[in-house]
Length: 251
Image (cartoon, rainbow, N blue to C red):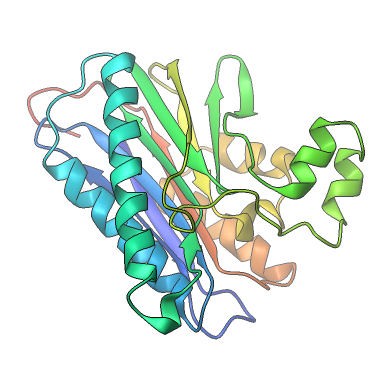
């Protein structure tokens, strides 16, 4: 099992407010995380990097998670703790007031994955059932689509497309979405910030992740396409491949 985080500033933004990484705990279980920061004068990168760093610390200290229930409980507790720390930090400095970040994280074990998200950074899964988004966007336009007020095509061009209904660190407490699914050899996960998903369609992402190429090449080509279409936002992506069972400390 292997994964790689790649991020790009894009062509317009003055700095990169995305953060993320792929980390292994002492039991060689994989965790992937992407955070897309926002708010304040360059405070978005503070929020995203802080959230990512705190999650890495929590994960490196974690015990082996043997079943989805244990993973969901661990993730719920970790996200609540991280949210509180980011929120409290936002109150300590004027330039950090109102900062927050989207957050998507996936725990990957031999038998299952557990995924959590807050905001509109996404996780997709490629399996025998096809290529599907397994997270729910916490955004205004997604709620309008779900309630039938606008179509998916309308959502792509909506003037308030970037309005979030939920983020990590903006409130004292937050309730993340959490889901667990079985997975097996040959399956893949794709995590990304909206800098990618706003520029590359689900069908195109599907084609890229199906390609018989290494992770770095797949991610490079995805980012290149997003930049070719304007690159107005930071772009971050993680591909996780279930290429072999984890055993004897090997990845």
